[in-house]
Image (tube, rainbow, N blue to C red; front, side, top):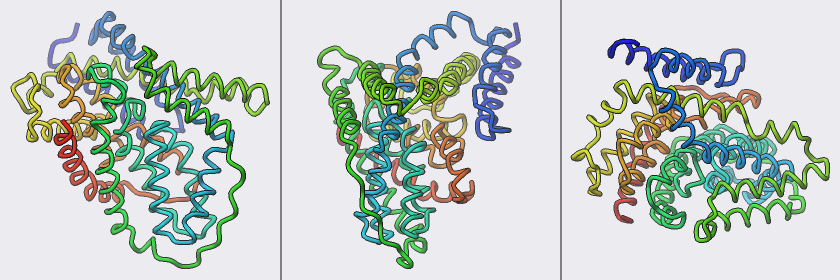
Length: 417
């Protein structure tokens, strides 16, 4: 058994190594390659008790299953042509105007993130938006950054929009519609601030010139769109009938997957791959490493820096702003998923504080590449597109959007509460 100080150093070192590997991804290896051994080391050294590790991973069961189901639904919707159809409609509707294209890209990314989760926006919508911009002869950089930013900041609306939301949803005591009702104001504010800043920051890239006419969109993929619509209704109505969102997503995946297999549009191997088993394994292993950090100083540190009397039951504006700020900083230091896992036990079952925390861990990651898993995925997607981005530019844009959008979103939450 390691001593207290040594145990803390080892635990934080393991987390840092996992996150560094996830950001760098040497040789393109998946994040689980580092996370699984790190979790094993934490268990072997006694940094986390097996019972505590099992309890944390068991709590994540439905969340990880939902993640896999939504990723599969998004992939199958893409196979059916949903994202290509959306891109064609956006390209036609912008009428050759780059600023209009940016607005429509914002709308498509915000809705996709809210309904199908941020991973769908990053992995599936981003290539479509970039292809649309290239087809119109429009500079792709603003639209690439828009997908990354909205994958984070537009993921505050529904419990199903982000893995962090799902983790906090059960502890909040809110229903699906209650959660959405409190977060719709912050969601609108965050998206509006992002759009205003983008219009100014990328003014040079949004100048009209050399724009080509868009092709006519093909027929709408009605079956897939219908399944997505029913899934969204199920997310809202399911809790009223005692049906959790995870089973609604699984049902949608079964329907689309069954149809795809019957029509041979997809293979069993493609279906399994779309569920991202290695990403799910990474989330589970990361949970074990985070529990080790929490038990060896992480939880105490967060308790010390959070505002309030320790209960955080108050919903005053300064308290909510403080919680959101701490959450945003934590997300950029250790990634938003570990930050959420460490903050949840500290905050307790207080809806106001939990929702403020979600604003921090969802909007805050737009400051750095390492802030969220979505941004790491986004960088991977861009690697083969020819669109160049830099950490310096990403952070500069984040410094313009995050403080303002986070502050105003928290104010909107406070008014809703």
